[in-house]
Image (tube, rainbow, N blue to C red):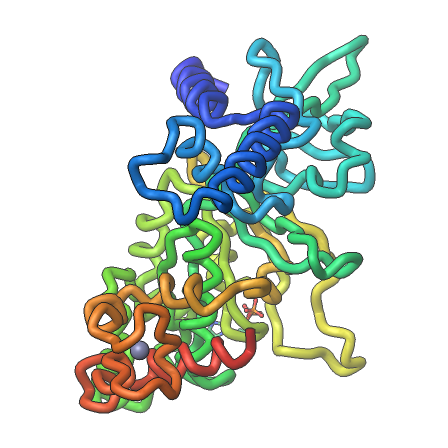
Length: 374
Ligand code: GDP
Ligand code: ZN
């Protein structure tokens, strides 16, 4: 690693350390806060001026205490060197330094501290054997419910800057609802989206293209970059590579939209298999089911993970969902009830705006569909 990179890592680490709250400290704060709440409930509603400094800090601790919030028995010795997890195997991880490292028992035994590809870790070394001792707090994550315990969050990629949401104009057909669902999940995980509409070579002509542009305008209005691309003709491939420059990214989207083809175009050395949605024996064509992080040089990194096809939204309430539809904001403020779900409520300003075409009808429909599924 070159000295500039090392310095950057050190600075990033010391910043995360400032935010880090140890297990014991957290427990103390929780107990203190419970006491305060009990006292306050005797004294009637709390006024804003009553908030103490300590309270404020407590409020900032992430609400989801799943594996996203890295706390608990997580020893982060500032003197230990850092590395990035590029692959997770049973009982050990591969690091970007080329080392294979074991996982310290205090991490391995805690189901909320499972390592994910992209994690930044503190590594100790004893008689030539490396061991992961702690995880630096994640700045973003993609996750799904843990199959072993659906109430637990399973992080499938950590510290991702950009997720490329890949859809195709046809084969499989374009469903904007899927884009909206992805955007909510990404927003929740703190990952910036970029939309790639692939296979534009299959468009019939300028009319098709114009219709597609109109469909995508709503996302551009939300300041989300949209690229119309084709791995067959190379359309927008250079621009995509540029957008991912120096960042850690991941491609998300349904099977068959062209994710492997796109990755092979921007990272030819990766040699991924491409093919149709399913092979003849119906088992799918992917021989590998594990994730990996690849460095393309110049700081550009791509996480290849089969898990991102099924990352989702769970344990989310209507409030959180609305936060991922920022365009509802202005109208939402005018709703009759401050806790309006924008569903059936009389005089709902959001529903009216969608009916009048002031808000995108498809986005509003996506919102309703997601709300229903939660
Ligand atoms: P993945 O499942 O998302 O990884 O999709 P693949 O990369 O395996 O591609 C699925 C199929 O779509 C393959 O048969 C590819 O050859 C084809 N494909 C990929 N990109 C394009 C494109 O830009 N245009 C056309 N016409 N076909 C494409
Ligand atoms: Zn409303």
